Length: 396
Ligand code: FAD
Image (cartoon, rainbow, N blue to C red; front, side):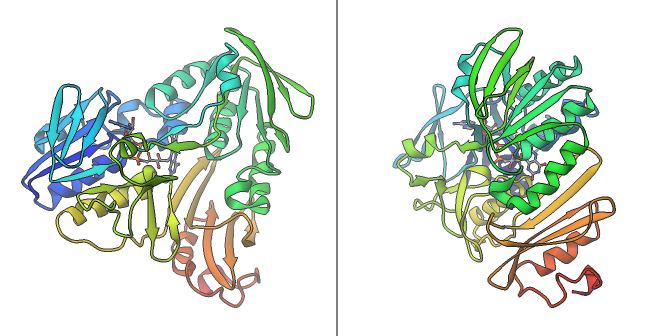
């Protein structure tokens, strides 16, 4: 392998090329990114950057000059439009980039809400730095904000908006925030947290009608009530960016289908990060939309391209900050798993999910020592004393 091309200019792309150079790969490396910024991390976009505590450059994976210093060609501002797998080329503008190994790290894009888009009202989605800066400017004016979707993005936006002094209504058809990922019992904690900070949380009902203009929207909910807002923020999940892989004739489903080592059926083509639907040795087929997974998989693919082909077996890990609460989650649960809740919200909380007698995931809320214990427990049989609050977590 002497020519490596990476399509996607995000976190998985940047960590892959970092690992290639750190391992001494001396061939050519090209990164193609449609955004015009050098690769950056997205978590601050709904946290420090959104609240104004951090400036955009703090989110960069590397300072912009790092790429030239490491002989990495960054082609920004233009998409890769086609892959010819027989000729082993990627089309970017009028260039054909030849490759021996190709990483597809095209990420994901927000699912749209056409009724909101068509209403003419101010509607924002949050994926890019530009989205975050536009939202930050609007929140700073104390805009009455309707957040559609009480998932991770919606919850973090609600938290930032409350901090900016905005009135926030948040709507989700589920019975609790995050119910589709963590289950209703864990979700109830998030409902209490946000209501406690003044969010008007409407659960069990969706948005039905939008009327609006440049100054705002009047939104009718499924329960017949109406919400007036200056701004609508939609956070209803993402779609993996599989278009290029499909054009190249690669198998896609909910993501680009890759094996346990993150290779497509064409062994020269790999996928990593939000777009990769991979075959996890413990968890089965999985696509994970987490910051840590983008980093770990980017590095894993780089090692694989250099000949160290092994199964990707890292347990998913996720973090979030809302108000003055920090949380970390490890493993992979389903909404119908059993959950044990330990501790109290005011002093730190630990949630442990089990399925068929095994621990499948754990989460700590402001109890930072717990994460290492949870990492140890995930995958193991549920220990005796798990649901006994008198047994300290560390002794399980
Ligand atoms: P991306 O970061 O999406 O990068 C892919 C890039 O490829 C994009 O820039 C895209 O424009 C580009 N691209 C797509 N198609 C093409 C093409 N044909 N040619 C060229 N370029 C292309 N995770 C956590 O664990 N904790 C958090 O607190 C957290 N907070 C988040 C907050 C926000 C606002 C968002 C949006 C995400 C957050 N995440 C968080 C998720 C995390 O950021 C993602 O999992 C991570 O960014 C995935 O990295 P990626 O490289 O796979 O994809």
